[in-house]
Amino acid sequence: MSNSSNKAVVAEAQGALDKFKFEVANEIGVPLKNGYNGDLTSRQNGSVGGYMVKKMIEAQERQMAGK
Image (tube, rainbow, N blue to C red):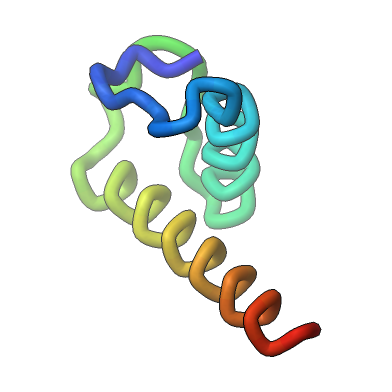
């Protein structure tokens, strides 16, 4: 679980978002772990969030295109 003060708009989605975050971090080679990640650079942490957004937009575009 994350230590962030950010809250999911849909509380039931928090677990899925955390799982997605760790999957993305693993995919792009960022050594994200549960709890404290202050040893990671801003660039590493930002790349996880940025890639998550990119993947969510791609999924939504596919859904809107009926694929």
